[in-house]
Each structure stands twice: as C-alpha cells, then as structure tokens.
Length: 232
Image 1 (cartoon, rainbow, N blue to C red):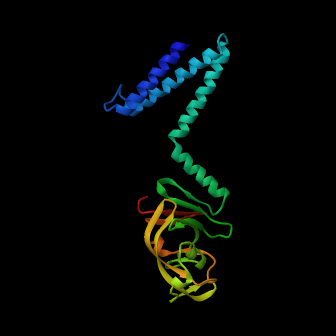
Image 2: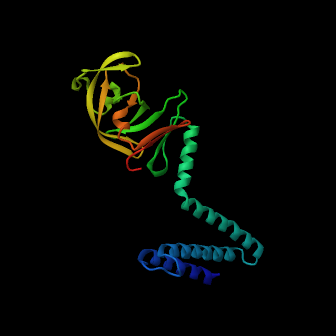
C-alpha cells in the first residue's frame, strides 16, 4: 500500500496549506473545516496503508486492526472537540472526590466544593503567594492572618493595629492594608482593601465583601459555591 501512504502524505500537506493560507470556502466548507476533513482522511489512508502492509495476506486481521484504530482515532477526535466540556466534568468529579478543592468551571467560573466541616475553603493567591480563604459573606472586608501577611512581606512593625473587629474569639484589633493583587481561579482583582488580624486572633484568612462585591455574582448551589468574575 505505498500508494495509499504517499497519497495520505499529500493530503496532510494539503490540509496544512489550506489551514494556513485558505480564505475562501472549499466544497461548501470553510478552510479550517476542509483542512480538518482532509487531515482526517489522510490519517485514515496512512493508517490503512500501514496496517495492510503489516498484515499482508491476512485481510481479516487487517480489517479488524483498521476498525480498532479508526474507533480510537474518532474517540480522540471527540475528546479533543469537547475538551472544554470534558475538563469541566473532570473538575467537578475531582471536586466531589476532594471536598474543598477549587476548580475552574465553564466561562471562567470558580467552583468550590463544600468541605466536610460545612465551610467553603477557597484556594487563592495574594501577591502571587498561594493562600486559602474561608468564604465569609459576614465579613465586610478581606482579612488575613498575621502569618499570611508575613508571607507577603508585612512584619508586625509595619502594621498599625487600630481597627476594632469582631472575630469568633471575640473583639480584637486589626491593621488596614491594600492587597495589590488577589486572585481566585481565573478571577483576579487589584487594589483590594483588607485587614490583618493580630497574631493569634484568627486561624483562617477570610474572603470578605471587599472581594466578593467586585464579582459579577456568587451563589451556593447544593454543595457547590460558584464565583463569577466580571469577565465571565
């Protein structure tokens, strides 16, 4: 089957040329559609030529091999075509298996599965530094623990603990700061007002309203928290 292999190589070349330079429709198809169909036909020809060469004189075995490889090829094409939908499903499955995991959903949505303790722990980045936050609509402002603030360069000497706040452990003082960049999934906000709690006053960072108010929307649906940025 050297002729089929050679013709397959020619079709591959034609597909590349059409995809790269084509502008007008070909046989009722757009250039990129024609290129994909041509490339698929080329792959089938190359595959059949290779299989028939390998199974010379064993037509039944060759036919079975072609059917199997064709099915694999179409499965791969299908996975690639629906890769974004597949990624969303996989992310949701991972979220169910691993409660509290933050995943990226459709159109830039951030999905968080409820943790075993009933809270939503949101994985984010502050100034590029990975940090976890408790989703808290009762917090008027984003709050960092003293340890988290130290990781992005704030020392106790830099902070002015003058804002009175109420925490689960009672009333304490916190220091106002401005976070240059706070990122959750694909959602990134700049110049976010925040507070730093006194050492020992808070065990978790709080994702409060100074970040949440900037979102397009957020909702809790069953055991899923869904955050949507302005661009989603």
